[in-house]
Image (cartoon, rainbow, N blue to C red):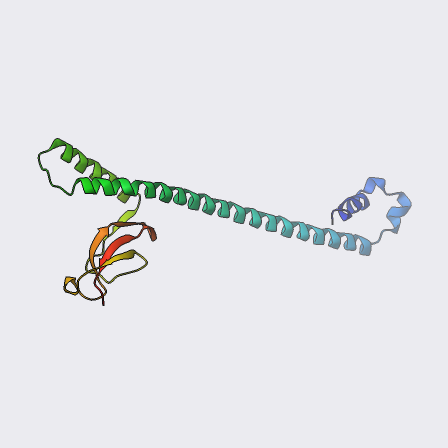
Length: 177
C-alpha cells in the first residue's frame, strides 16, 4: 500500500515528464490515476478511523481498570478497618454513661461509622428477615420459638457491604425450619 504512494507521486509530478511523454498521456490514464488516488485516500481514511476507534477503546478500558483498581484497594483497606469497628462496638457493650473514656470511644465509633457510610459502606443486619446466604453465614441454630423458620434471629457479628459487594458476611443465628 505504501509502495504505491511514492510511485503515484512520481507519476503526478509534471516537472519530471518529458514533453513527448506529456503528449502521450490521455484523459483515461489521468482518470485512472485519480481513481487510484481516491481509492488510496479512502483506504487511509478508514485506517485512520480504525486507529482512532482503537485508541478510544484503549482509553476507556484504562479508565475502567483504574476505577476498578481504586475500588479494589478501597475495599481491601476497609476490610482491615472492620475488626477495629468490631472492637469499638464491643467496648461500648457495657454502658458506662458519665465515664469520659466511654464517651470518647462512643465518639470514635460514631466517627468511624460515619466515615464508612460516606464511602458507601452499609451494615448487614437483617434480624427477623429470611436467611440469605449471599449476605450472611449461619454459624448457629436458634430455638424454634425465636422466630419464623428460616429467619435470622440474632446477628452475632455484623456484616458489611460496599455498594452491592459484600465485604464481610454477617455471622448469624438462624431459626431452623
